[in-house]
Image 1 (cartoon, rainbow, N blue to C red):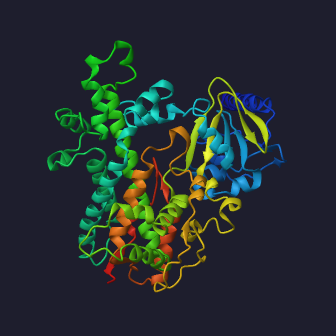
Image 2 (image 1 turned 60 degrees about the vertical axis):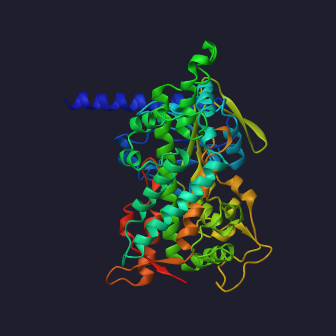
Image 3 (image 1 turned 180 degrees about the horizontal axis):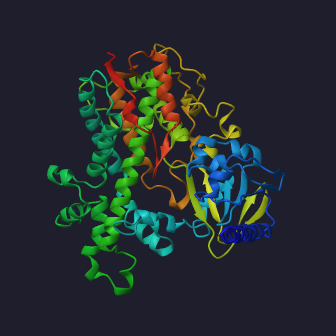
Length: 507
């Protein structure tokens, strides 16, 4: 029996080493200009836990036997690691395991090139099949299918949709705020933001305002509800997807595959946009509210802009949509939160049956065929070379030029020459980039800014300590909870109800 176990262990070890060696040779033959990190264990294997505390056996500029597996205990390893791994091994490197070769980069130029070449670097649609519960969608198809899905969905995100999102977000935020003001301590921030985000999507993007259908909210009922309504003059998401269905008989047979989504694909896209647009926006809003409560000086900094923007707006009047373009500090707060706590930690791509070259340090470098590609968004967003020596700090003023590094007195007027650093957005990959960037980028920005303006135009938020806690201890505990956010499908604060906040009238 012992002999059988020994032979099995040796055979398994030999197999693992052979697979690792095969993958290593595939990368090495490409003569990479970046280091190769070699691990004989893949994430999730039993041996992982046995070796996770070992350190590198060797290291030089081109090769490392990599046993720092404590870094990779979770699929969200890079959220806790930030830029540290790249600081040691470089902006780009390969991680070779028995199961795959992975090119990992935190180089903004390389990332931009990869995302701009959607035909060469495809999305790993196999990993996205879990989203195909109701049917294929824009996120899970490639090639001509992707063009067809995009053609029939992206039109739903337009200026009119953004304006509607602004108005609906203001109204919903006002309603939620009225309930918060009646509570001594608010613990429902996360669920309330989720309800706001979902309702804004339903009313602005799907044009569904009927109370009964909003309460039911099954995909079948939503589609059927819109199918029974005229779609000629509507530009909401469901109507655009169904419009071709109504015109099928008038289309030439060859054109039908280009201008038609199956019922399953309609439901798949509806699920995608509801999930992606709802959860990511809600999680971002929760993080923003908590951070502003944790750091009251930055809250005062943001309030100063709100007061400036609404100086000519009556108390009973809804802020005008045109104010969105004038916001600087509020957008800075939003983008700084997404930089450090954005819902998507990685942008994944892959090479198919042909290797692809990218420019690394002004040299063309080959990424072999059938290689996984990971754009490490967290590392990109915490690179000290890009964001400064305080890249791990939440400092919204880094997005504003001619602004002091620390918040100033609330009574001080906003500097006339203060301007928003638009070019810095190119360094942020929160909505991905290139042809496959999120089509709802501006929609989500408009919603977030509108909610923040409505919540803070007459109020402020603060952390409430638990019995026996000081205020500073409560703030630090809440900050630690934000910093230790967890990943499911997207990044979110774990147990957000544990953070207690209070909303007070400020004028």
